[in-house]
Image (cartoon, rainbow, N blue to C red; front, side, top):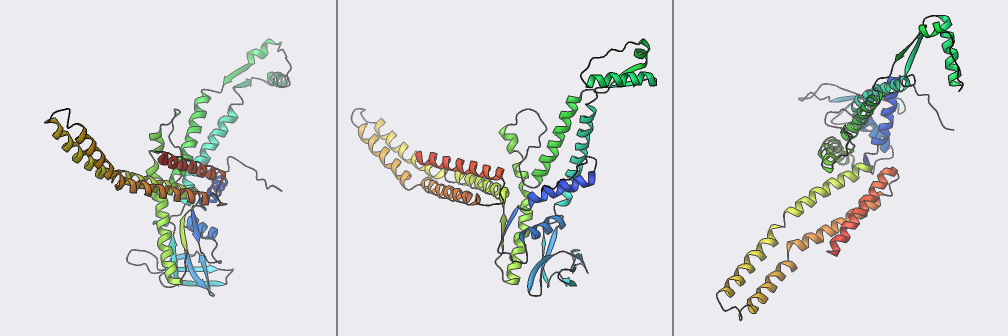
Amino acid sequence: MIRTIDYNVTNKTGNVNTLTRYMLAKTLSMFEWENLPLTIPKKELEKQLQVNGYTFITEINGELYALTGGLGGETDVYGNPTEITINNVALNFNKTLSIKDDGILIFNDDMEMGLIPLFTRYFSQIVENDINLSMLGISSRTPILLTASDTKTKASLDLFLKKLIDGEFSVIGENPIFEGVRALNLNGNNTSTFNALIEYNQYLKGSLYNEIGINANSVMKRERLSSEEVKANDDTLFPFIYNMLANRLQSVERLNEKYGLTIAVDFGSIWKVKAIEKIDNIVSRETDNEPTNEPINEPINEPLNEPLNEPLNEPLNEPLKEPINEPQNEPQNEPSTDSTKDRINDYLTETTLSEIEQAKEMLADETLSEDDKAELLTIIEDLEKGLQNAIDE
């Protein structure tokens, strides 16, 4: 049986909470955890980090648990708490622990904010904009407002409108009725207002997705976007999510050292795909720029000067065949067989094959949405085409 929930556009708090829960269902797959203890489910660990901004992993009755509590105690020299008070009824555990000695405190980000304040900000504005759209849509049902000066005129108007709705033509025959009826035009330029509200809604959603590392259009323009505009905000997508990953990596290192574990964490779902693309773009730019100076300078400076100077001073009929054939073959063959360019091509080919295999393995991830899988397939197809073109050349 499908559970249904009545939606009320004016229930601001409830709608913000609903949108926040839907977004958390997406962001909980942002990171992939490996080798976690059975007592620490990946979903619960990420939920605590993203909702509360932190979690504290400690050992209770010989098992590791990720728990939250009240941070406090005497602060250190930087004003950070040194103790955490945990009250867990299910474990029958109520105790104040030392953050430094009794476990590992993991933060979602450097400022310990989590994602809820970010979601609340944008979803509050989106909910308000939804109310504006709803009110505008309802008002568009009545292009004019009819007013009547007396009861008799109102009754005649009601009958006229009823027959009009039923598809019947009717006639108002009394002249006083026309004198008592006034029509007020309610609709102005509704089309432009609708467009502005829809663009604002798109801007808010695009900005929110950009904050969590997903490239979405937040440019409020009706014209087609150029490739430069689409790529303009690529660099702004990663600082926050890389900060989240850095906090997890640092905490995992301390956790493994303290409890002898082999936990690992990395980007997951579409965030992993985007991170691979970003790194590949950086590597390809560096490898393209570095080796171009070596193979170009050597064959140009050496073979061109020697053979061109000698035959110009001698008769044209005899020496032209010897200096042209010899220097052209030797200097051109040497850099091509043992050049840096060949080694780079081999490296790029191996790297591309490795990326194709990694992308194919990611397709087996059940947490990927259909859109993520489609984008992965597109990336695999582009990589295979680029590799084939490089081989053909």
